[in-house]
Image (spheres, rainbow, N blue to C red):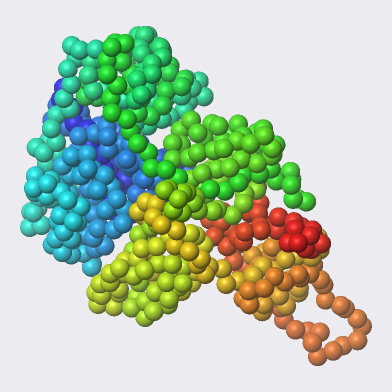
Length: 592
């Protein structure tokens, strides 16, 4: 049976997973209601976080499909996948056109010499303009230095949600057959010689409680067999022995245990406990290792600490530094975009690709029963040839025209420079470049500035010269001076001074940050103060308390709004903000 290996790449929310699910259903290997996004967090947020494998069968051909994340923070997942496949389906929204992550993933695939198939999706949208979208995609191909062969890409028009595709907009279509035919025509069969010694390379990792570490590997040459002794080679040539205990191949989303896997296929391998991405699995000690797979380096760092607040240990099952350390070690087994420096004390330094990358890890940990606190995320600054460097990002903003002045003003204060601008009817698209530092903590402000109507997306450009001081936080902290339960009467009086993060009957303690102040200075307050009741009637005694709903802290919001001298306390049920030093005297001493 012939094998074709493809990946589906796109900007976040352009319809990769919906299209993959429709392909699985049409070829009879997917069930109604079963999605590639199987993780609870993926279902809640509607985004792909982890790349996943599936296989469909069409016209006596096995098509291995890898669904990749669309968010820039998980870009390291995409890069590894592209090395293991033979072509990509580039999915672009017919209304939005190419976006930052479209550019990022397309650039990577063109550099590897892949020839993409462009799928213009969501052509049923009211504002969809497939012709203009196709033109913009071609411009992007040429801008990224595509060869003539790559720029002469086939185009398929689709409505992923309805499971419909067509080669020309005027064609009639009832299913995705035209797309599958284009895949068979334009993707070369996975080549490989079964007669030579085995050479396979893992591009993704998994973990199973019974089998341990698993490797998702592309077999380039030879045959992989169960219970076979193999040699694992690092790109440097260093080798060690191992043994394959189990092999799984894919059918739909299911893993089917198999005795062997042949050249050109993608398989899941168990039995190599220390296997890593980019290493070469071979049966011959003389075989040369395959080219290494590079992973983008992290851009932000923060400390993970044991929770030592007055409310510590009430909700979490795992609260000690040893338990947190073991959980991070387990995460390193599968999360290659993450780096951790373990220290002997009660804190670990964690390096990640962005705020979302870190917050997904924290969200998973709290759901498993972990309790911890983290420091403010800081951008990684490095020195090269005695020049300070920091990560820069490209930001694309789509917003109604009336907000463009506010957005430009806010971002320019944060070190961003406007590169380009397109106006279309009542909306404007702006292109900015600036330091990642300036973007930390801006997203919630952006939602407020555009009244929720703006869309902002970004991608890391790499390290550039340090951009100097930038203006960021314009609010101060409202700090509780007592411990107890917050009362509605006290909060009613405090809400005039800023934005509150808590509601009535919330447990508070001294040093906990209960809100922010609009004037920018720190303010000590008493949220537990009740109304003085006497038997003397007064004009103010029957005032109705009118509380504004609290700005509820989530992990992402907390990472955005926290100051440098604060910790974000994360437990299975609560997210709280607190000062590193809880009493005012301790804070004054630390300042001195």
